Length: 246
Image (cartoon, rainbow, N blue to C red; front, side, top):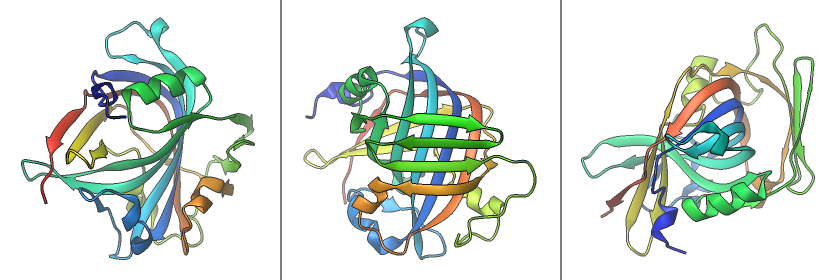
């Protein structure tokens, strides 16, 4: 379906109660076939490309300027690849390419698939907090993520390619832009997100079992970093379409 409605026809705003993002480093050759021709992988050390799994508790998602009571509260899981795009004016933009999105609300699936290309589906999502720990799981989607936000120094994941958290923070989504590509018309849809109070905090990942990553048949991928952010006002501008030429 190539309806113009799917091209983010209006600005949207929301409030992120919290967002947990796990980023996996993958040998770059394994991700090339997952992104369209107009994009290139955002790499590190000329070896690694990255897939992020973002779990976001969102409140009052609505067209920008609408009252909050008309918004939707939902949980979002997004699977994204870190990419770069050179726009029509020659500027190089860092952003994300969406592989799949899941939500706990059928209304959000319905509306999301009308106004975006993000491939929403509905699933069960359970979240349990206990002390400094948080468990997020789904039986239908077959994932379990357990993190610990205990205070104190948190080490990077054991096999992370990064040397410190400052280096790792460069690959802590979401990034400023998200891209969609219409291969038939050779058109790139650019969506810019704007955020406030953006301070990612490193967290320890106690458990991470995510079946969707297994369906990608990745080999040699490792957990590279994990961050949490809380209480973030966020909005997306209306989508902008550019013609792409090789």
